[in-house]
Image (cartoon, rainbow, N blue to C red; front, side, top):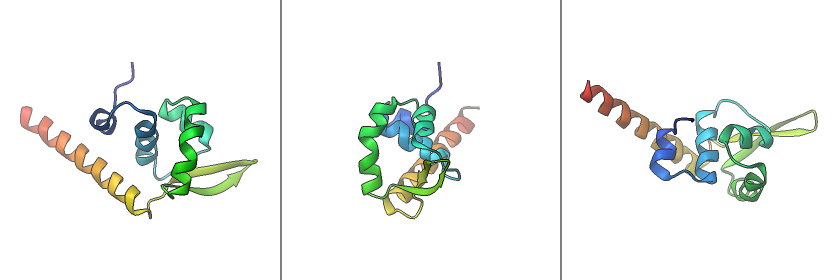
Length: 103
């Protein structure tokens, strides 16, 4: 069984959260949506229902096209994405500090 990240533990084990979680953790890299679904542990058909809204709101951005596939990553210039990344970093920082106190 895969351990859930602090982001998923905090906001719930929902497809959108899992997709955002993967994109936040992998923000330096771009992926085709099939890989995003696989790495997010989200059914591809479910991702296809969520994806248009992420594109429309510019939460994700198409970076390039390779061998007929579009590659995407989280849009680190998007104000909402920036706040989600910061929130994730704050959650990790808080969790790390709690573990240090328990030791």
